[in-house]
Length: 227
Image 1 (tube, rainbow, N blue to C red):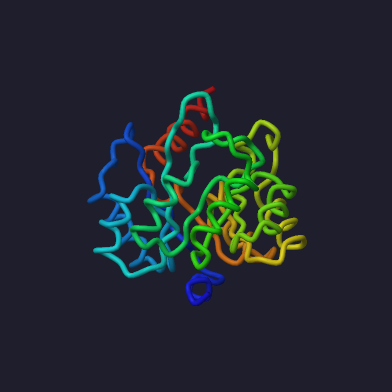
Image 2 (image 1 turned 60 degrees about the horizontal axis):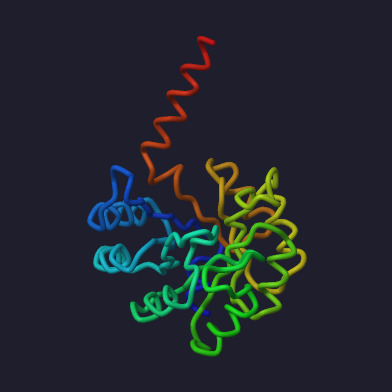
């Protein structure tokens, strides 16, 4: 649990760029991670083994590792099956995060079936469940995950309108594992608020490492001025 102590009450920066984004490059993500470290980040969240390898060469920070993979006719895409878990484990990921929602996975398993298999195979690995509701967070904690994160609040059809900070507050009250705030904590004030309500750490991504998204916000605000 030394890794969890390293990120306690700290900022974790998500350094990700998908294939259709301008900054999609393991080299660029490694430099993003370095910039985050120099800025004071205590950890990194990263997607794909390739990016993780490159980031490890630049920084010695705890990494929350995921593999985003789309499967046909299925909405679960964050480390959706044990195949992705295997890849991340073999890379030596500090923390492996996955979709912890109550939805059927691409291989037909529900969450409990999936995580039972995962935990039996890797009993000593740290695992984090990305959830969208309090019910899912409680389910994940009871199943034995090490960390619960509010990553998917508002991103599932049944969690639309959920305020991430409120979900974090509820999770802190109802689960006995560390809760990480993630998902739309896009200002310093929101990040601080997450820690104030009891989050173990806070993850910020787009607001720091996705200049296209940041630019779009400024452009929309400027356009809105004339409307």
